[in-house]
Length: 543
Image (cartoon, rainbow, N blue to C red):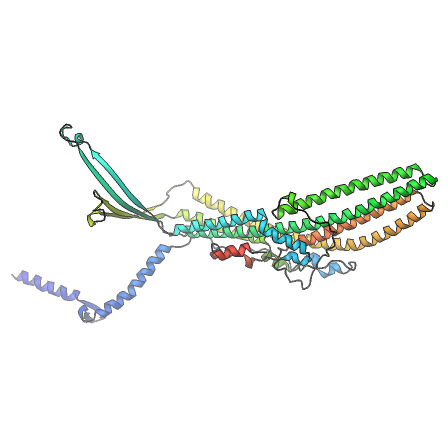
């Protein structure tokens, strides 16, 4: 009896103790008197638990942090320095001032050629190479969406129906006394599976795909610039061929007049048959050269047709001489070139992509965790399929870790690290090549422009010499050989004059292309927005 009373007493004390909570040292309060304190404590604890859970689910991101490698840039372009133009002939091309200016938008409009402007507008719409690179960019965006889907669980489910018969022999009954048991099974099931990104593998893969899409966008801009520059070069080459054609047409006409004169002098006994034969040879050679120029013009015309997406058979351009002056082009500073060239932007984004791939491979050293679950309804009759007794479910998780791979993972990481270092070298080589191309184009423009000024004087002098020789020949003072020599000199000077102008204007186009046209990296879609419609519009409308 005493023992029972003691147990009851202890039980009451235990209940009393469990009904109290420590508020401060030496002080207690019963739950029942102030339940709000428990609710306040729960309100503080539950958010903490939620934050910890979220942190565990988001995990950490394994992999190296990307830092853009340094690429030394000179303070200025050597060939554009003012000292290079100190002793240049008057009229020599010079870069635009200020030096830190840059081209913007439709760069070809600086040539003030309405016909070229119209062709460039058609190119951006109809060029098939640009269309191909644009679709490559769209495909790269879809890859980003594909990788993003790995953040979410995969769900599957569907109905099933089965009708089965159990043979009588299987239950031990006599086959002739029973027909067995026939049963229906109706099912509606669903399954879920999720692999939380604990180590950042998916995040690294998303970044890698985003950077790859940026590379594709920069490649598209680079291809568009290449096609635009090619169109401008072919346009000016064609106009140059028109100028050469006009030159040789005039020469052929002059040869015919000289041949008529020589034959007349032969009949009067002033000249001989040798002079007639030499003039006939000269006429035939010039006619052959003129025919070759027509061939070159046709080739450039056909190339332009392909660039603007038209059949060569249905495209033609009127004949017009090359009279376009070379504009002053702002070359900017070398440091700006790193932000203006699409190929440099593509090389730099390739580096970021390679860096993310290293992070992807490093996550292979950590275990994979998968959470799975499933459930549904199963019943022998359709009417009871959605009843509580028909419900079934299961849930679970698993973790796996590769214990031994004979160094495969380390070798794979080392492979991608080496690839990243190779991309660093490629990036720096791209930068160096860009500086070289700009310097080459500036030097070509400067030297060719000075050469043209001198060549104009040479043509003027050669024309004066030919006029004198023809006068002396017609009066019988000098033989025809002197006239032929003067004609050859003038022809060579005139042809060099035209080809130099072609070289000058195409070098100007090459300089614009080397400077990146009117583009800069601010027009490259951000990695986080690469899948947006705004990114598509941004890439599609870039000049």
